[in-house]
Length: 388
Image (cartoon, rainbow, N blue to C red; front, side, top):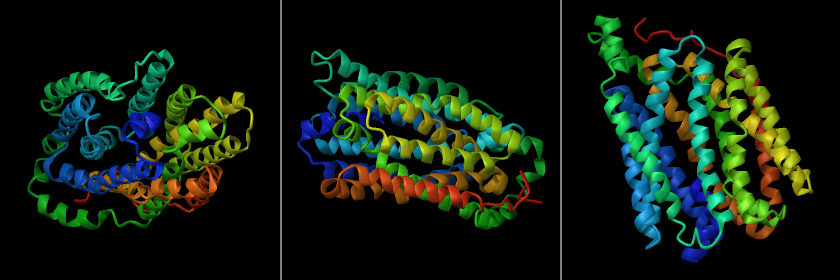
């Protein structure tokens, strides 16, 4: 999100066009999308303890490199962005599988707490950029200082994770074998079954819905800052602040979505959350007075955030444990792979038709995803073992 928040600074610094900016986002998204199933497969094969701390180490050092050298060459910046995308694919599938395994009851709430931390981080990144812009006085004359600033806490956290995560015997295959000594002997049988375990109609339907939503979200959010500046006539610093606000004010929705998912069922929460997000996008398109923009963002953010805990929990109920990391890898791959082309398409449409048509297309995609959610049915027993 920091990269999108620095839209105007990067365009000016490297003298690139909006289309070139969109191509960079597309390349970054493709790396993230296509490497996510690989990260899930590696977690299923080698265990889930290694990859989260490794991801944090790579992220911290890459942010440091961008912060120091990113302004020297567009190729250094792109290389750093691609590395950051790859490091994320090592973190999420393994971590989400661990959560789904540990919290078999109250799973949606557990995922909401996990999402709460991630979304707070995503929202805080643009918020720091907004603060630096408000301060003025050349604070962001070197835009890469934003990356340099964030490399410090990330590297500190990576050290903590290396010390604690790798030595935690309750994570991953070690803990599973302790509970079931016969598991290791039946590893070959489980592996053969897990190859087809994710080819479940309910899970494939869920992937289709997430892909539509992911494409629509990438179509619009990557150009959220210039949309507010050029269409809603918001100044740049405030627009960047709204970008962070779009994530941060949705944090209550994350918690509420997790609680409601456990109480009333994930499918109904996903449908309701998607509906709320669609309403928020529609209001954002229609409102003309900038004063009402925070209200529309508040509605949109609740819908965006409330769905994710239930989506992750429903995936755990649909897909057996031993194939779950692959499944979570695919939940990133499909929306990102399809959504990767959205920035290029959006940049092309913006150049000829303006920003409003992009938001209108996004609304249609969100509405379609909402309707399709009603047809998702759980076709497998919750938390069943592949060996059974």
